[in-house]
Image 1 (spheres, rainbow, N blue to C red):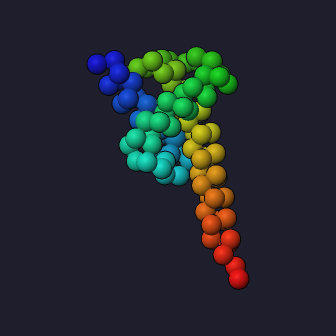
Image 2 (spheres, rainbow, N blue to C red):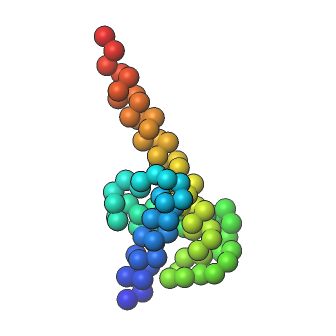
Length: 90
């Protein structure tokens, strides 16, 4: 049951990060869960375990870390998309 709770909280954190940044997390629900997990790890590195902990996640650093992650991923995807589109000039 604990793993299920972690997946749900991770997914919500990833979804919130996408909502706050106005960017879709690639991969839908799975992408949100991954963004929540990686984002919480990133946020933990930066801010430690600040604020309330829910489902094993320190919520504030997890959301901030996920926002950073979503912005980085969307930036990289946009750059890769530009390279693909602009690489075929003849």
